Structures are given as C-alpha cells and as structure tokens.
Amino acid sequence: MKKLAVAAIAVAAAAATAIPSNAATSVRVDDDVFRPGSVRVSKGTTVRWRWVGDAPHNVTVRRGPVKFRSATKSSGTFTRRMRRRGTYRIVCTVHPGMDMTLRVG
Image (cartoon, helix red, strand yellow):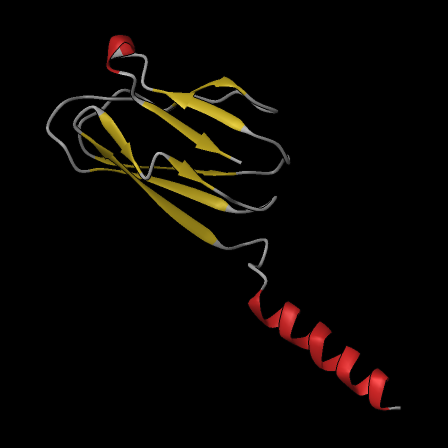
C-alpha cells in the first residue's frame, strides 16, 4: 500500500511539472540573431517570434516536419503552433551569411 501511495505522488508531481500541449514560448528576432538560438517544445506548443531589432528579418523553416515562412518585416510578431513532432531548423533568408539560425525541437 505504501509503494502505491509513493507511485501516485510521483505521477502527480510529474503531471504538475509537465508543459501542457497548448503552452507558448517566445523567441526574439533581434538584429541578426534569434534569441534564444534553441528552444525545446512539445507537440502542440505555440511559438511566438517577436521582432525587436531595426533590420528586416523573416522566419523560414529550412528542414523540419512542416515547412512555413513568415513575412519579411522589422517589427511585430509571428506565431505558429507546432502540430507535428520533430526538429525544425529555422533561418532568416534575408541574411544568409549571418548564421542567423534557430533550432526548435
């Protein structure tokens, strides 16, 4: 009986710390860099990119389970719900030589 109670407490603790599938995470699109450069998300998480720099940039999936692309802009936001599990390799195609990359997975 005591082992069952301990197991129930462990399951409840794990559920309380899990990120819900509708959680959101933010990425800054700064001048020539995504901040952070890598984020871990679960299937169903919404990622929100927020432009904070002065130069125009975009968000373009180069490799991943689903390809998408934002408009090229220098302010505002772009959101995308990650409906398919996997790793997304994201770049800004406006500045290909700047190594402006992001890994979402």
